[in-house]
Image (cartoon, rainbow, N blue to C red; front, side):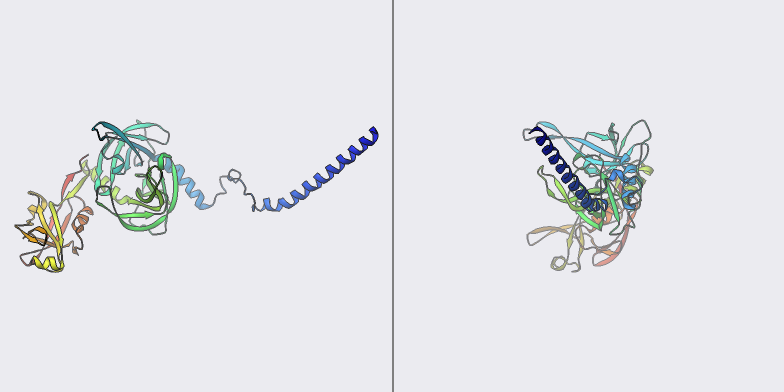
Length: 389
């Protein structure tokens, strides 16, 4: 029995080896073409080598390696009061970018607004306290500075005047605190207007579909050459579980030309100011209301007040000299009616404010006014009022 059992065992073992060996060979024969042409598995990226990325991938990689070193995380602390008037600290985070080796940093004003304690974290995780050099509320920009005691990497400021819809853009920032995040997209549109937290309009914004989320604010938007063309500022988004807005592919950036303007002013005057005309209020009137006030039906901006000693006052602009009741409203009348600004007819309540925001202190603004039924033009040099820090 034993020899028979041994023979039977050898026969079974041989048969098993034949079947499995043949099956394995057949399996390899079937799968080999699929793995070799990549239909089932692609070759790991690490095996491709540094020189096998396509040109667009390599551009992303090179740009990120260079510019992430100059992109920073900003943490600010604002002290608030609760319902029982107890003071407690509230922190917020955002991004920014270093613009020179001395440690000057550009970010959004809303990232640092009201903060007494601003901390900048570099890509090497070293932290520094920052001082505010100046702010520009009109464009939601802030210039701050850290003192690292060494030369720092910095970005190159580009050109936002010749952007084209469809061109590639890249954003680096710290969305939701995830440091050093790169996202890519295109310029979706130009010249967008968005109302900010103060109720004022941010104008001429760049719209992009590059993913921008909370924490990206103040970070740089680059063109494909690695130059900063915008400052990521706001998004349209859906709410996350934490109550924050998440990206839905509609983000906005302030053009870098605004940064260059405030830097020029800071370099020449040591401060960042905003232009002042001195007209404290206006009312847009047209049609029946304008006719009821004895004004042309095409209408314009009726001046409602002027600051004494302001450029508007020195230029001789006139405010109201009496009040009338029209319907349910008490209106100041008798002042100048502004019908055009720099040759362009006014078309809304915000026309004057928008025109001033596009200028710098020391520049002239030309107003076409109607006074006593006569039309005249007045050129006024705008004054300068520093932004309160």
